[in-house]
Amino acid sequence: MIDAFIIAHVLILFRVTAFVMFMPPIAGQGIPGTVKTGLSVALTVLWGGIYAGPAALVLYNDLTGPALWVHLGILAFRESALGAGLAWILGLCLIPIRTAGVWIAQEMGLTIGGLSSPLDQQPTNVISQCLEAIGVLMFFTLNMHHTALASLGISFTRRPVGSGWIMPSWEGVVSAVSLAVNQGFWMIAPVGILLFVTLLVLLVTMRSAPQFNFMSYGMTLRLIAGMLGLVLFFPEIAGAAQLLLSQMSEGAAY
Image (cartoon, rainbow, N blue to C red):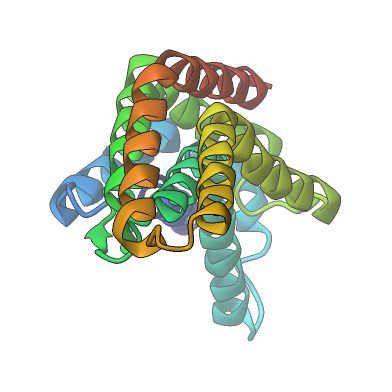
């Protein structure tokens, strides 16, 4: 029985570690690996005292047979995949903010120089990095980290360790991904409309006055229009981001 109890703790550790390693913004480069390891162990000790007992009773009957290690390997892989998938789903709350920053930076011509993202290993731009930093601050201000940890704790009740459970539907996952991208465009829509109107004015001007060089004056005007739009519509952008995170927090609670 003690073997099953230890294995249950190890499986819980696999799920928690995968969640901590892949959950933005915890998965960023700014947090040392020792902090992530300590957080994983602490959460395992916390939830192990609650959920390891019932899981050990289920595993006790399965710890027999020649294919024991194969069965344990499948369980470890399944727990790791579940933790990483849950972290990825909850991390979609920051995808609209990144999408908005990438789109605006592309319209302003700021995608030439790449910067390091505060959320993962992928390169980003200055506008997207600023919006991501604001999104991370809102993430902790709105106690989304509490919601993320609470969702991980609820997963041990709805999908117990060592037991069979139903995988999420592909329709729900695809819908969540597409909705995250669409919300990014809605969030930055006022600035996008301003840049689109600016581009139309520049094209009409070039058509009327061929001596007007788009590369000399047009890029500068687009940059000025984009910066002006970000300053003017920043309250709307921040309000949309706050509403998005609040809706994600309410949805994750259930």
